[in-house]
Length: 391
Image 1 (cartoon, helix red, strand yellow):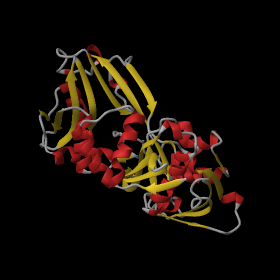
Image 2 (image 1 turned 90 degrees about the horizontal axis):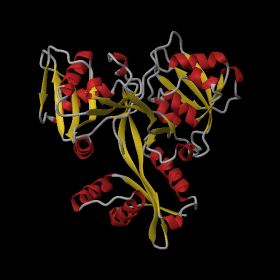
Image 3 (image 1 turned 90 degrees about the vertical axis):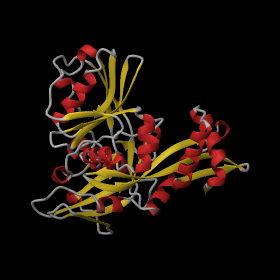
Image 4 (image 1 turned 30 degrees about the vertical axis):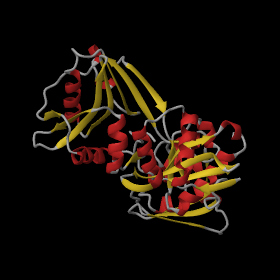
């Protein structure tokens, strides 16, 4: 298998493959934007008969985890020509991508799967869900007066970024967005209309990106930092009731909109979304902020990771009282009363905050002494996962 790092000379071949595999056609302007993005991505391909037979790209991102920014490799654009499928090429590309991300110190990776089962074979695991709402106008939250002001129009990007960053840091797995991402992805995909809620002091506390078309109010992004901003934004949305018949939006899986309605019987659906994978146990855990401890914590982790051999083995994890972690691979004999056996998927799900250690133990996804599982349960801070973006 001839795997190569592709260059801008391969752009047309990759674009042709993407258009065929994902069944879309771009105009000239969109193609030029893709060409610019291509140059900044790490694109890997399999060459066969002098052409690109399969490819994927690693997009460099930063993601918030426990309030800290981590370098993340976003896997996207995975495609193979039909005549070359089922030859193990994508498996080879994924293994090569893990090596690339490890070299580039991207300690965590996200992707949007066509099949969860397929990517689980290579160490990725579900890490986030979202809740999809559809409300008729008579189901919308009651209009309530607030002390702040709602301003519709085109706010400065810095205003939206300030609100978004404060909001995103509250979750695990959100993107730390660069300006180009706002312009080329967020604004391009989430509606042409924008409105910001400012509190009584004139500080931005929330915003909505949306589109009103064919009597539908489609919310691309709804972000609020407090209850006042939430009420102010929903009052603004409800004031469109003479123009619309329904409102749709996506929200975090733990969102409480239905509970706060007079009639909570609204249409809502929870859907699995993206997957995550720890690329480097050592890099990831070394920068992971654990919870404060009453006394220093020592745990042995016996990690199983068939596709990233640098993760495989027994690790000594020490967590200081201030939550700072140090970890190293040990050749000491395994201490059964201090060792937690875990595969890379389960470790990822727990450290991302998507599943708790006690829950994983009940499902048989991790194995170890009850004391060790309890210690890890208290060491991992509780924080919900969310992702507002797509790639």
